[in-house]
Image (cartoon, rainbow, N blue to C red):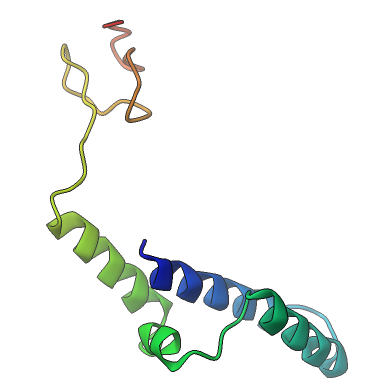
Length: 100
């Protein structure tokens, strides 16, 4: 994610947790102030605009941007061609082929 997308994600997740908590309105108000001070929530219109169509559209737009950028290097097993667990893995979790 870009820096702005990361801030938007953090804002959404913090808001979601507050909305679904059992806290009183007074406690939530206090938490909002603290979260704004600590950067967990934002009032930046540019960031909030990323979330205006909901979290599903936000995630979809990030996925489409990443998928179309062709900057992802997939690490596939040279023997069975399946995707490894990590980008730097040297052993296949499926066929156990080792290319260290």
